[in-house]
Image 1 (spheres, rainbow, N blue to C red):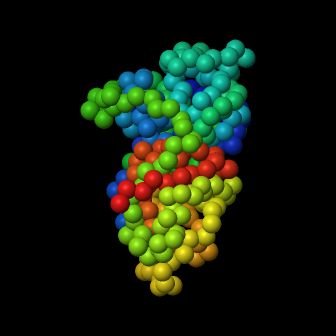
Image 2: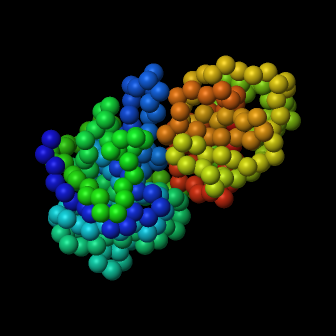
Length: 287
């Protein structure tokens, strides 16, 4: 596939990596879905440039990333509310941006949210593994670092069916996260069920793309029975032995041995992807 160098990483910030829609069809081998944490923002960014739904993008966590533009191109930036500069000039547009060879693009600030997505006309490219360019530990598909060169491809067309009607959504870190009861929900005591919908849980600093650890009042099971290792997926909320919760995210494992007390649906995962350590999470359970 023809590719063209378009960006050089001058500073990678907290986290910067290529992502697409995910790596599907390999969970039986223990391979996670991965892909963009905030899938809605990812799809919206591709829609704005007329790209295929699965075209590669840059996912950036936090501020401080700096890039040199290596070729004239058109980009679009969405996700967290942000401020960027190009050659020191501030840009706050919500429209696609034409950038030119030699310019310096910097992610100056993030005002609200956690992750931004940069799409490029045609899509970013790297050699795929298992039909995806999303990060995969132990391979060349790792987070980007200083002096890495990022490539784009040409010739992709818009997938109208997949991207029709997608609109940007406001980041609201105060909204409740809708969830369904998980397979082991009724292992909880009634008091713990009540706490689940009334308590503010706080996202731990140790949270990452694999899972968000939550701090709150410990939850109690009716009994101390153990469960066999069972299937889990992004959005599964597990109860740890100390009574705390873990929300599994895009890079989560495929099986787990902790009770699965809740399941976050797709909209909720996208909202959680824009929350930071220290932010609160409140669940709204639909039984």
